[in-house]
Image 1 (cartoon, rainbow, N blue to C red):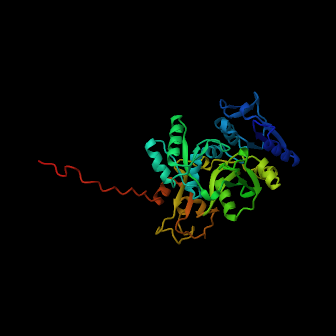
Image 2: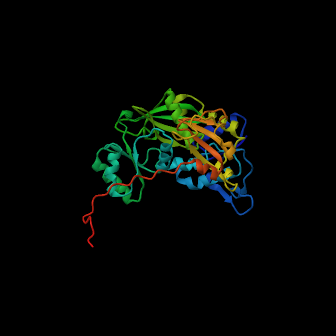
Image 3: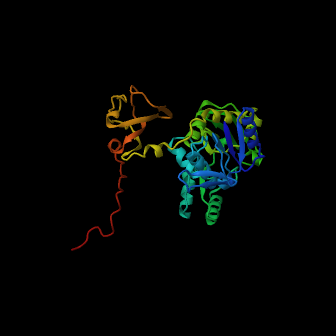
Length: 396
């Protein structure tokens, strides 16, 4: 396998470990400065240039994109994807993980446990938002902060208002998040590679510091994850479109609460805490998956006129409830079921004898007109009964 590692820090521990692990396994590997790429879109076959020369062929690319160059870095990764080069982390996945609001919106749709969160812009909405997440103390986060930078604990409502107003005044976007008291300055980082957690550690903040980041003096210790934490970490990474990720979770009283999904997790702390070859696990995964480059399924499947991808929900009382896929008549209507989602379980290519239940979600490809008939109209909000007007009857 010929592997390119996209990194502006060739001497960083993580980059060196990934390079060493690849060489030890007999692969060809080069560390390429992300900012030295140029994308040529002027020809029939768009291409990449590196340091002014046409880039040679690579089997896989491992992005280590810094937060400050996210836009350009993801453009380079996206071009590799268009050239059918395998990458464990897609450009969309990296972009989604860098924006805390976008990540929260995506994860919340899939019922991933998270601290209560609010996002507002108007000054009048700040106090209601603080109450919405459970009141002070609250954690205030800049949308694109990294390594604990831009994360502030506001002990009271007045302090929170002042901080948020100041940040809004400098045109900063912030999240307001509940402070999880039971975490006691601790969190868990799980490294997800493919469909499993390969290593995990607990990070503990020092002194009065509530942020447990290693860069801020936090100490680390190896931890054996409960299955619920492992499942949450893997699901969060996969939902974000990341096959290599560091998932940070708080230990809440009702189970894991995902704080962040990191697309370029550092390896020094986790390897020191666990003694495990995490870099090797990442290289092994890439080597096994290199023949299956990431493709945009929706983009590829919607080329045919009149066909597309849609999600059909099996609502209570629907005709589909209790029927098997074979009995549902979907195939007769030119609709193919790609995956069946039941709760947190995902069943790819479900068989025709699979019986449908309330709440099942079917990811389908087929004729849009046929699928539109199976999607019930959205319920309109019930209109409020207004107060009687001051002049209830117009004379004349």
